[in-house]
Length: 271
Image 1 (cartoon, one colour):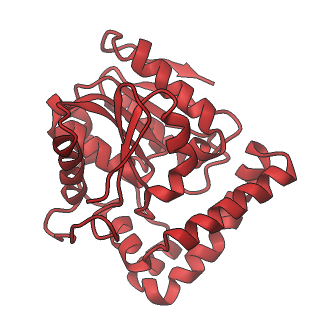
Image 2 (cartoon, rainbow, N blue to C red):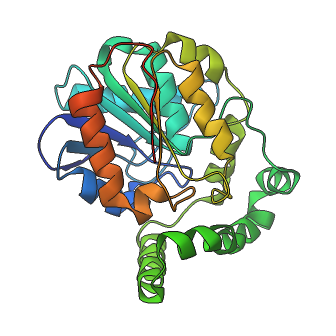
């Protein structure tokens, strides 16, 4: 398995989102590496993962990858940070590998009870036929968020060009994305929440700007996980970890450095 290893400091495993490739989080990796030793990887089934997906394992296909990363790097534990789909994997890992999880960070993660919209359910059933429509509509879902987070048109163009470069370097697999999307509607995330013992930070964008997953669903994790804190990145929606990567990294740094040792039951919100 290809393991990207950047920076120095406390170890942090960054779990990619639905695309399955860390390249789409490159700016986030670079920002976090100013404070952490960031370890990330392509999700199971992707080129470089060295693994095929076992349908019977579900999300545990990916939790086993996290465990493998820690074993290969001789790390007993690390902060586990999951973005969007990756948050579900991070949650599952923290619930089942408590000793290996020093802190848990859930970023814009689909909440418990998440269901695909009727349109997206059709895309998932026939990804080769309808998947291109999903990709084509993505810029429109993100348009309001990008205008708020990146008010300068030149910044938005640069962001768009960088996204295109990522797509060229790490092409997405529509069937694999569809298979991961189906996993979001199953499992027992609420039950996993009850088993998490690591200090937890839940990070969301603003409710009216996240057009990808409901921000209220993400914030539900702060209620279900004992002692979890909720932080809102103002002026962002689903991709605040990318558009405001430096701010996001500073939030994670402050939590791991100062907040992770707080007593259970302390909930807070930073705008």
